[in-house]
Length: 226
Image (cartoon, rainbow, N blue to C red; front, top):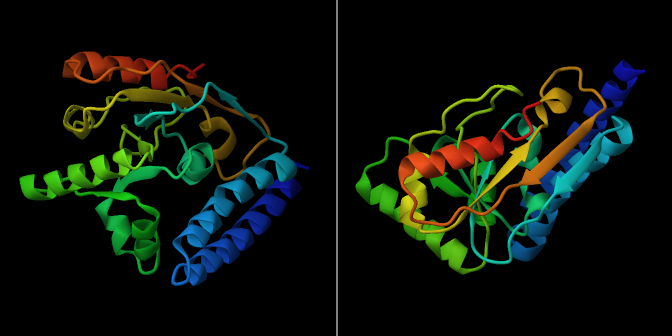
């Protein structure tokens, strides 16, 4: 039964993803709002497939703030990366610069408001990124980062990327850590039914020393590592 559920999930999710991606790119020249709504269809479809084909549950403990913030999210699988536009209202996600070079996808990422991150960028490029992020936050958009820099197996605790503390300092925003335990369900070839939980931690004010903010974020995003 699990094999059949997975087969149904993969066929439905990837065919649906192809259709939704195509629809979003076709709508982009006509309306940015329509394009953004089509992008939100992708995480909606992912959730539908998880719940109805794999028998999963998605639980959200807490909620985003009604004011500008930087959300630091645990990264265990592609689930939370795809789900960001569903979890937040029009989020601006920090993403690797290399992704913006992918044909078509790069244009779509720019149009949606993702923030390119050049890990070896000079001071000028870094300040351009910060100005862009501050403008997006001023427009009321939540900023989203996966501070571990890559997917981390469930239960494993890794230090945050060094750039996170610098970003926190320069943005001057409060940080909301978000734990998620998608790994055991989603990060495997043969996915399985289960519960994926988001847990929003307490907001962390701006201006704290690097060691303190990193420790508090690290503890909070690993709160579901049981």
